[in-house]
Length: 348
Image (cartoon, rainbow, N blue to C red; front, side, top):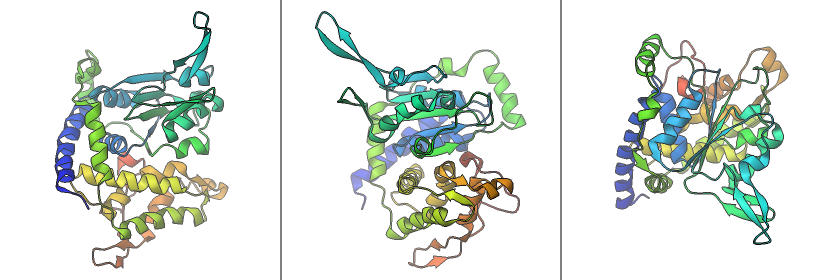
């Protein structure tokens, strides 16, 4: 259970995250759900994939998060001619020392922004696999630890766009969540013209939190309590994706772990030291949908992975405080989770 010191940390967490949220929303107009999800992934020690059409603020969101936290930041522009060594680093022979010297690549930062990740070749994309999962880079038999905290925020264009390489399943599975920003409302777009019309708001953005603050907040999130019934509920949701007739590839055990970590971070952001089924429900689409592969028949029927996850949420019994279960209420994931708006459905 959470101790008094942990509860004090959660109080600090909410105030620190609130400062970062306000800082990011000064740049990202009208998308509070997207900002909240990015902070959830940061505190859950995950990586974020931002997928949408060009020009909606994918890179702006990643930069706003990076500049709001006082930590090391590197940006990688993925192109077809980018090499794996450009990301991880390379050993160069030093003639004076007569030995090889390791030159760290762009991955050696606390927040790494990968812009248009699916424009690089699969060989280059695979350079991120070890660093995202094990938080280290191995070059010439030597392993180099990455700094803490470490987060990859990658943007990608839809695979239908020209000049893109679809991310392999192993790469997508390492991203904790995927978010789709979408077009802003008319009011938010008008406000954007006023704010962004003269100068970029990123120029005036100052750090409102330090890297060591984020590390302490991550430790506080780890202490959030998750009851066995909630854990079973998460396992039930992920297991349903592996037997669904519209899916040829379900979610992995890593997805279950990511879903639970994200739910704990969401509970901490809400000021709670315990996790509810609502936390799992609210993040299910964002955490699971990008890992799923629909069958050919489902694609012909225009059934998306997001719709399948929503269907699973509707049919999975929800655990109660009394120890039993109740039928799942009609549920709809919000726009932050990349799910289409479904008429006749409501958030719990």
